Image (cartoon, rainbow, N blue to C red; front, side):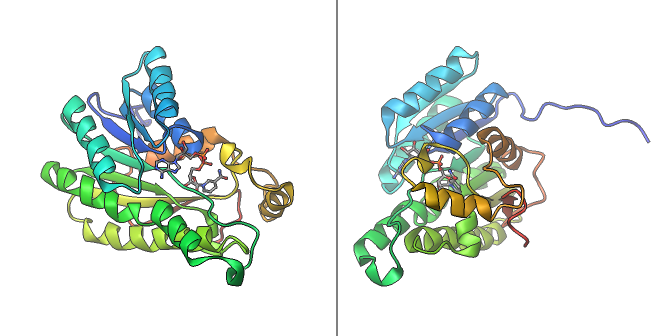
Length: 257
Ligand SMILES: NC(=O)c1ccc[n+]([C@@H]2O[C@H](COP(=O)([O-])OP(=O)(O)OC[C@H]3O[C@@H](n4cnc5c(N)ncnc54)[C@H](O)[C@@H]3O)[C@@H](O)[C@H]2O)c1
């Protein structure tokens, strides 16, 4: 048997849109993709943060631009995606890392309907919005990668995080259905289910909540941003061609299915 031959992970003209790319997991993914030669459009509701990440990619020798984009606003998502198509001619992948925690630390009967629905609007409904925006372009070219960052909370349910757990579980159901819808069109739709990763997202969490989450991780530690970014880069690469409608685990052994 001959030895495996190292190949570039991405073809030369590969382009991706990273929504929620201004911080945390999205930023780490955007920077790694940029470093691997992908032209990255960093989209975030925080335009300054998005531009700072795009500038860092350019400073490191990569290609990137930024767009202000609230993922709950279909017009804004379409605007960011179309700007990427205008700039790059073709977009190959969308990473959706935008997310909020929603109401925390209260059991379901103390959660207001509107705060629950707001969490779904940010964490779940964009699964449909992004398909509406990106899939027609992907169908035309017979290729596309969509990756939504879900959570272990969507698989197992975190108590007193009902909006978060329900929205992330919804996202898992969404990718399973969408993956099948486009399975013969060269388009993959997948989710990632990280356990606790040390990012600014966690800063607002009480230490007791963080400890609760770490205690459930057999490896006994949080995940590293570099570990998440590597997995995202693989999932949205051409090499990840035979996996769709799947939830990739990133949980230090916590997820057992
Ligand atoms: N950090 C963790 O431990 C962890 C674990 C599991 C899942 N996740 C998920 O990963 C994703 C990213 O989390 P993170 O830790 O990097 O968070 P973060 O807060 O560090 O970054 C989130 C980014 O999304 C942006 N954003 C928020 N709402 C937005 C909106 N409506 N439109 C556009 N952009 C918006 C923010 O401005 C920010 O730049 C989230 O979906 C989160 O649920 C995080």
